[in-house]
Image (cartoon, rainbow, N blue to C red; front, side):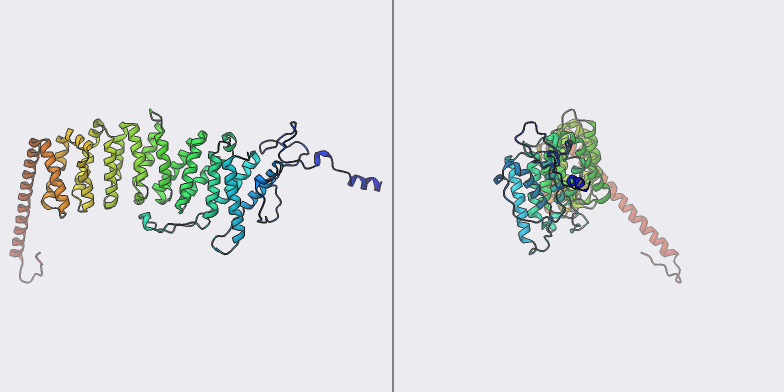
Length: 483
């Protein structure tokens, strides 16, 4: 009996328990096992990052994938991914120099492999590749170092991530995977899912501009290739904007996200959907509120103008929205707004202009009289734009009475000679447009000034009488001070 038990314990393994090649290539009846299919009974799973030995991975130089037989490439590919999953501390430049260089060379080989398409990856290899990419790029970002007041980003020293030699290759690998013609979108969308996209968007807050440029390109490519993700990506970007506008007013990647949206808006079909118009009103226009608008204003202005070019009827909504967030004491921001409004008016039609011209030129009147010469100068430059001058000429009976006082005040008393000259030129343009209207406005202005002078004299006289009465009623013992 004991011998029988011992013989059973030392029986030979059956064929179903023997290790099979991970990627069958010869037998037509063999079943290729992938991550979404079930394993046949008794068939051992292929090697993956999860099933690999749990002992510490040794960073060693491995043979090139193109130099090994096709049957060995799967396991070698997984081993290379294991090496690339090791993260190094780049704070100490003298530590692990050899290991870091091996990882860099391995990443470079993988980039070349995906780009050339010489080795088509099965589903398991794609899944493990995305796991490796996630391990490397999804990390805690360092705290913000520049000022929290939203100043000019050019004044801050550019942050350079010390791990960029590896990060760049990982991002390049992800980009090549997304754009590769060999990548099946039906399979890839399992790994490039909503969770992956959200984590990718979180990385846009990176201080490193080089990383944000890669993220911008990758997210744009994902948006283009994976149509199923498009609504989700737009909503996720909306949420970032809302948090930035109404809570933090701090996010490094607003400019890059707006660049992506500029391309997306350009592709909107007409007539424009209501959700796109709501995005303009609820997200893009309120982006004029934060103090740090100078860091992304160019991209924001491009998106706004794209909307107006797509649907001219939105011009009134956009102009009134910009006026709503007009700065009171920030002269640099006001100059930006004046430039943006000029670009918007260039694509605005007469009917839409007439709807908003009264509140618009009431604000221009205040800008013309701004003591900061750059604000007044930027407002006066509007009269160098032929399209805007044409709109003003058509509606001069409404616009000239609004701004006439501001022009006369500049000509008679502005401290800057350039502003006086520009105001005089605008004055001459209105005389040429309609001399009768100009004379009428001048007459009303002089009457108003005369009334103002009379009121000032009356006020001075009233104060003088009060002082005389106070002096007569004051007794020698009183200590009243007369001002």
